[in-house]
Image (tube, rainbow, N blue to C red):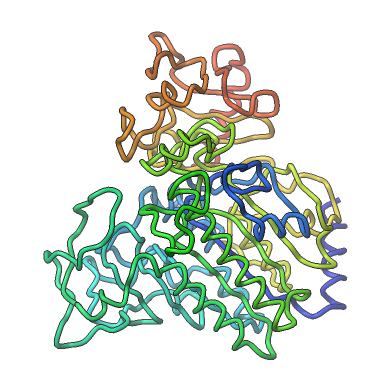
Length: 498
């Protein structure tokens, strides 16, 4: 059956020219943050238009509930746990992707695409630890298949607070180098951090203005799209929205009913709209596959807590948050629009993940992946084209922040080999990392292992849920279905040995 689907897809691309591809990988956007997924206090008309004109996925996941490992999975088609990659990358850390490893940008560049990455990188630069920010930042995106890069090198809540273009910090001069141990130019924060201080580079830091980040990245992306002529193009657009601190441009402040969290979503929706308008103006909209997704689920930081108090459910009805193995940490929005290829207003409940983009773009480009390339990726093209409704994958391994909670999805079953969600460990409302069992006392969500915000005495040592009958993960079936637990344990062990 899948062979027939492959032949169908191949015949389509033998007749048509290769499509442009715009992949929008938003930051910390939860399953419930988009109107098409049920948000009511936040308005996302541009993102919603992608769903009404294309396909909405209801069982899509990030292969990791953590930002940097999730981006590694997207870029390489390989599970991050295979590289012992669990946590975010910070200022001192070098490039986390081997330059010998094939990326989705490599695949498309090899097929004749112009390629660009604009936005948050968060996969490291260079080869030394600590990174020397005063030297050319090589290797980086350009050594992984991208022709052009501009963006925020780490993330918008941690230093350095500068832009990088290709191999260099924008605005950095020899007379005023960046220096570890010094304090960066004062930034706006909703929470204070003291991670890997690096200062100096005053002119470079002054170019980075928190409330202008969204506008700056969007303008760069639109300009790059407008410059493309002739060859098909691939744009990887990775906005910092809606990662904290929530600093949307002034015109978006107060526009939502979910506080700064919702206002940042409004800015993100505007950014998506600007890209869509640029494609339309250039006459490329009909020739472009646009994908919108998120690197992980929503986070219950102070902005997320305030949004919840206002009535917004960042991860919908799902249990858990970013960094964790419960569904809210990694089930994400995924929407794809491709005029005349994807049926308008369609949806899919297939189990898929961001790790599958590698095999998908390879099939679109007519590239057969070699052994070791995208080893954990499967193509979503049969789903997108409606050629075959057979499941493209039956299993998915999901990495939370803690190795002990490496989880396995198989069909309807979700197996987590430890208690709680394995992510952030904050215990009190108001804490930046409030999450897990402790947060359930505030959210009012139910789980059979949790009483009054704590694991109950005698709770099972691990967790098993049937997500088809219990998507909210209210009832742990670990003790009721030992047969499924044994199967899942053995399968997870086998997959992690590969």
